[in-house]
Image (cartoon, rainbow, N blue to C red; front, side):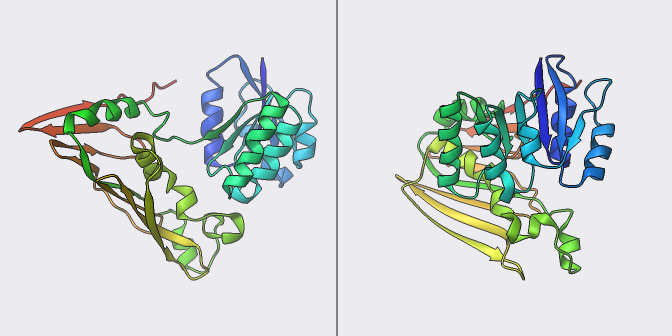
Length: 282
């Protein structure tokens, strides 16, 4: 039996616990929330067994628990590094939500700590690397010849943007929380670029800054050998269009880089459409 502790009470955590509930090898033992009342309400609503997990309000109490083998860190981005580091140092496996850290150096500290303590560390990200559509996209690339141009995008207007416009400061638009569009949804199109093409030779980037300096949207133009890739992301506007990879012999379109469902390959007057099956339900 794996004892799982969760940090945070967001929708992401609820989704994780829905999946955990399907596996009898995992037991949700501890909820960590700064607000004890909120943590108690969360624990009572989303138990994975007949008994609700107990609630703690500090990461120190969580990592000291003997019935915790693994920790899901789903707190605001700014707290990820310190909380994950504390869990790793206590010998707990860690699943940390994206963006795992604010800097590459902070992530390397977590990697080093996981190695020293012999535990697993993974960033939780429904990304191109782990998505079942990745293999299909990779297999399709040789069929379109040498890649020359790519346009990858994920733009989804946040449900909390209206609150920001009204003068409030939701966490996802608070720079003190290491938030913003790049860290929230930028990884999806960026990882879709890096997964098949690797790290670019050079790139230029820019952002749309909101009243408090937070990035609401952004773009990147990456240069590879004979290939330009344009990447855009936004939390303040929507874009229903697909992403496109253009080769000398054909074109690939992907309906949604954050969750590929349909991949279409056009070559020499033919069209091959592949539909990626959705995850199996409970």
